[in-house]
Image (cartoon, rainbow, N blue to C red; front, top):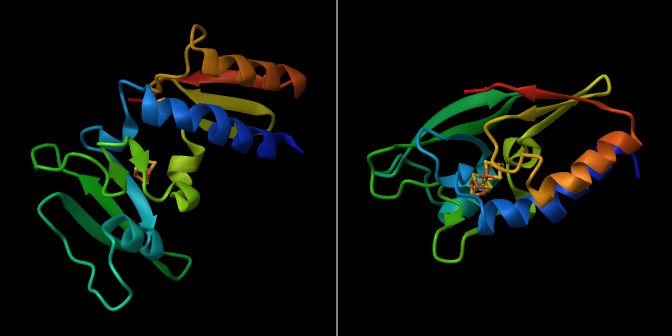
Length: 154
Ligand code: SF4
Ligand code: SF4
């Protein structure tokens, strides 16, 4: 395995269970969150079949856009509406309904790797030296001689 695969493994095996079960700042229900979803992900999140039309509803504002010819949707979680979480999030079980096929941005956050520099979002609850989820990430960055930087994102 290489560094990218190891980071993906860390996200899947260590971070994701922490996110959904323990994180107090859960991204999936954070006010003003925007998630970029492919059509198939959005359909699965809403439980819509292929012949049902995707429309805005009371809980989310959908903005259609194009990337590389494919139609994708920005899903905005409105802070005042009655379902203040991502349509794929199930609050009762604290699980992501599309975990097996979740959006790229959900898979990547809170890391970005470029030229042996691993950037970590300071806004993420797990990016904290006292959090056990970080231990494996620190080990990995040592193993691959990565430089780490903390991003002071908003
Ligand atoms: S797609 Fe899944 S991981 Fe991403 S915000 Fe929605 S519930 Fe959370
Ligand atoms: S803030 Fe970090 S730990 Fe919390 S849900 Fe988001 S990515 Fe996961």
